[in-house]
Image (cartoon, rainbow, N blue to C red):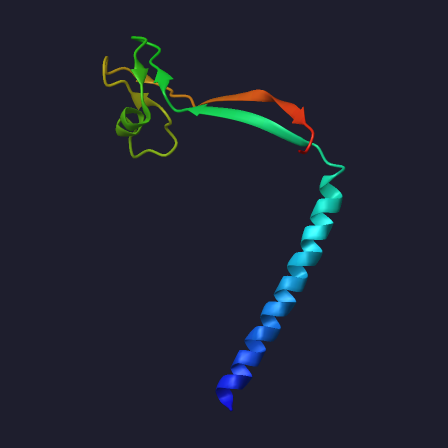
Length: 101
């Protein structure tokens, strides 16, 4: 009957999927023994310092100060109303090598 045929197909599919997982896990264990992992810390900040008044301008105010001109990346400082180029600050800390545990 149709129901038992469907059940048989799903059981066959499940057993072959578990076989693939077992093979993948054993390969993963074998290769991870010779690998080292690196930890990298990345800090992003969209807060920019206005070059005119030295105020901190956050991303909401930066976007509010943009114009419809896509080629102009300058924004207007909400504190002094002067135009400045906001910067995205990215800090990457040196990786530390760790042996797998």
